[in-house]
Amino acid sequence: MTSDDAAQRPDGGYETALGSTSVGAARGWCRQVLVVAETEYRLAVRGRWALAMTAIFATFSLGLATFSGASVAPEGFDRTVASLAVIAVYLVPLVALAFGYDAVVGREESGWLQALFALPVDRSRIVVGTVLGRVVVFASAVVIGFGITGGLLLLEFGLDGFDTYVGFLLATVALGVAFLAFGILLSTLAREKTHALGLSLLLWAWFVLVHDLLALGVLSAFDLPDAAVSALLVANPTGVYRALVLGALGAGGDAGFAAVLASAGLSGSVLVAALAAWIAGPIAAAAICIRRRRV
Image (cartoon, rainbow, N blue to C red):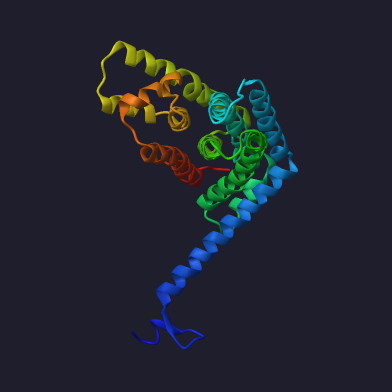
């Protein structure tokens, strides 16, 4: 190693120029992502998104917990979680898409995106920072909104069964982040906010309403192998969510399309990996698409 290939550290050791450059690039990447994330977080909080989403989740969860009829733990605790999961399948994706559909196209219309593109910042970092900032806001709203109900259940039922509620919270956050990522992806593709909103509503209708009906029809009409049944299940993030939450409660048979979980033979780790893929996929696609976007 020559003097050109190495640099002396303050502690007397040496580091290669390549290693120093890699570390510096990684730090620069993280710094830029965090700056964008902090900006998105501040704008979301200032725009009352955090307060609105928290209020929505708290209102629905408290209403369901009040009228769920649960009275005896841990069965009552589980019934409440099952009721919350059923409404969360419809509510959480809709709120997440509403929160994410204007993340890019809305910033473009306001002129903020053009200012960012003029800076020496990789466009993919803008997407990652945008996702990170909004994920923090959304996850906080889910945890606080549904957590208020969880606190009341904890006071009523004690710790017995509370781990089920924690699992429900984590799965709900993951489901919302997946649809938030979808919303940001659509925002990178659309040229106007109205187009992004329309695409978001179509996406919500497909995954929440249409897909399960079609899948159930196919399962009823044909005797499919287990691999095909598993593929139908993981092809929908809401189906994976139902399988995770309601399957953990032993309620798969009452969960619509999630009833195929028992015959599909999918483990919890496979379902978690599938939900993680539904999060990572749209983010990666958005990072690619924004590089080709013209402003």
